[in-house]
Image: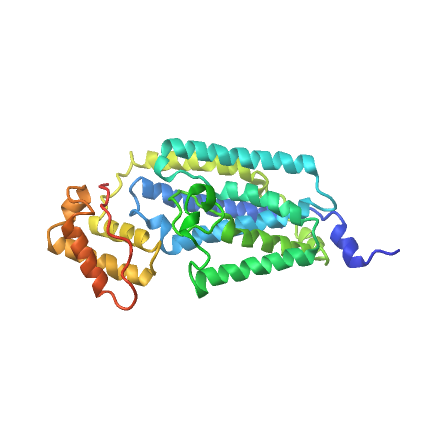
Length: 343
């Protein structure tokens, strides 16, 4: 019995595609630039909340999406013509071990925002899930990819938060991705919606293996570039880059002192970040600006910042209620203004 050409191509061992390593290397550099913005914020060179808002927030999500897409691509390529289990388990152990190390280190240094399920945790778990789908029929993978994509569209644009539940807020459930208000973390990458990127990478790669596209991409070379070499050592780079960048940012403070932040701007950023967890961005901007104006008008802003006046003070609750009532249309925001830390 003759095996169809498309099936034979799909089962043959694909060539080494330098472009994949190069893309992974480029994603690592992008990740490092984003993390350096976080380090500069931590040292006071950028306003609090800068790395988590605006275009930097979009930049961070694009980087994480790229990484998980490439993981899906690599998982399929390394699983042809058959899964090399010793290599797979060795790689998994390294990623899972690094994830646990990150959790332990952040729990010690930043216990209030420790990384309980970040990008490495997500990659480790999705690798276990993805390897199961390597031997399932392609239509099954395509169907799951489509379902994840539709769920992401619905949860993000059509009915935001429709899949979320406060019952899933605790850390031992939040990693699934359906928590309404997950605990804060310096790196939170739950399975949903991020599995969408991995399954998309797997689906497109399995389709590509039925064509001559892998051979054409391999013929482009690029495997000898410094980006490709970096991409082949992604885990080591991930573990080393942040301590180096923090050291650089810290050393910079001895050369150029960080500017003193504008208290009003800091308040607005942190108020908006807290409010938008449950409310729309436009509504929160109006609410936070109103509370800032009221705090300043009533001479409460400075004592509120220092904690001399607490959030449950009757005056604070009254002005928050006043601002909530002035916002139209829509319900009043659930988030009250919180005391802002001094920098």
